[in-house]
Length: 104
Image (cartoon, rainbow, N blue to C red; front, top):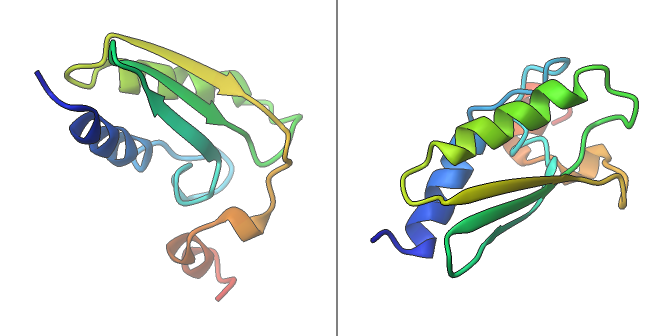
């Protein structure tokens, strides 16, 4: 059976393949992922936000995260929690995302 660290690594890799529909950067490097939890039963809970609370494609992004994480070997269940507290701002972005968007 795969351990939590292996699953955690695959989750991050998978999230780096999910892109914000309005910004050409993945949601992980944008800083939209606040927390990733993997419990003893391999249930994954992801707490995430969006760049704006009124994002018209919010459901699409959340559904994509849910579906892609559920396909990872060893994951038994996925819950995606959407939060706007604290609100997202560009300080949460990785250096790679800042560079990509011309902020560095």
